[in-house]
Length: 189
Image (cartoon, rainbow, N blue to C red):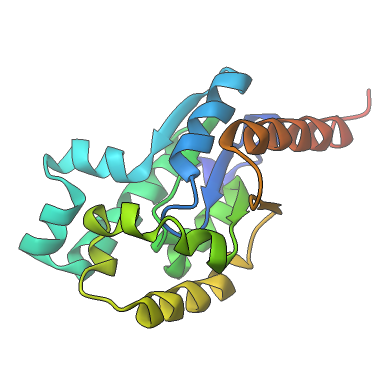
């Protein structure tokens, strides 16, 4: 059986993958975009929790980050190769893995939701409990992780700056951006 990533996927049928730092709003915005485009929404972290019957913090605690990254990679590759027309939200660290970047960029449209450090820092207290990567980290250590990940997020099809926008405004912008792209890539008769 050939996987979708080896075939030509029409632009309109490609999964839309949202990347960005944890807490940027990928899930909230992704659900809104999915609703506006009549597509299914897949939150990779929720998909992992469902497939493995454990919350992400439990997986980290019982099996470690390396195990989590392996099942995260397998889950994302499976979604990218076997599903189309979805809005997919990746975990903040997923794009660090080369195999994930490759399959997403090859078979999906990747949108980077960019939020400035100052805006993100305002959300930090709300995020720490459910983000194992942030446990026992100082603000400076978290900023170092934030800064390091900016380089991996640089590989994308479009960047969407979310500072000073609410989730609805970001979702509307993404929908308009996608519709414009689809029109530009419309095959000539």
